[in-house]
Amino acid sequence: MRVKEMADLAGTTTRAVRHYHRLGLLPVPPSAGGRRDYGVEHLARLLRIRWLADRGMSLSRVAQILAADEQGTDRDAVLRDLRAARKSVEERQRLLREQADRVDELIARVADGGGLSPLPTVLTHFYDDVAARMGDLEPSVRDRALKVLAGERRLMMALAARGMIPASASRFVAELDAAERDVCARQICAFAELEQTGEAGAAQLAQESWALALRHRGNSLAVLNDLPAGALGRPLWDLIGVLSTVSYPLRVHRVFTSELLDLMLADPDFAAAIHRSAGGRRLVL
Image (cartoon, rainbow, N blue to C red; front, side, top):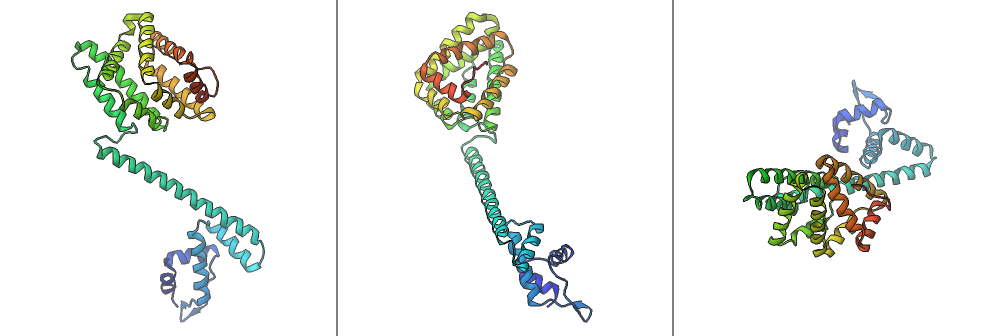
């Protein structure tokens, strides 16, 4: 048979056949009338090559397997490689399933009116809602508050891009009613004014933020308990620390975060959840 006929029967191309000749995988047949005449043995060999390659074998490893088959040796090595190829295929399948799940999330987000952002749709709507509640503020105050809100949104987006925002965070936000969202808007405004109100304002704001967390104690603890723990949790807290410092560079901002963290650590349940996630080390935000 001619090379084109054999390639078609094997579901490949003449270019691939010639490539296998160059690599020594497929013997070159004798010529008849100036053309190569391929026999059934060549087709069987080609099908074997394609079968192994389609199952994850590199062509160099295919050559070794074929040689081992011909010599009748190293069967254990062949089995190991085949099993390794199987695991490789399973890993690619897992990654493809995860990619499909992420695409499904994007489809659902856009269908729900959200944008193509790593930030969960519920959080996107929450920040938009809080921003809208600042519409009646004096322009200069509103501008400062919106700048703070944008900084927090960017911080959360960076965490979301790393897969560090648990689903429980969306549930927490979803349960905040209109009055509590007004409280959130006022707290953002208060944070924006900390440069004027100083450390006393920072301590007062920390108390108010802690009070909101306590009103939703179950959801607050769920978020902390859903954070990655130990060796996986430490990078999360490192990233939060860096992003917080960049987003909120003033000393009074760090006074607020320190005061709030101290309040949380004074509560045994919150302290246990934080220490579990941070790997037991001392936190500095």
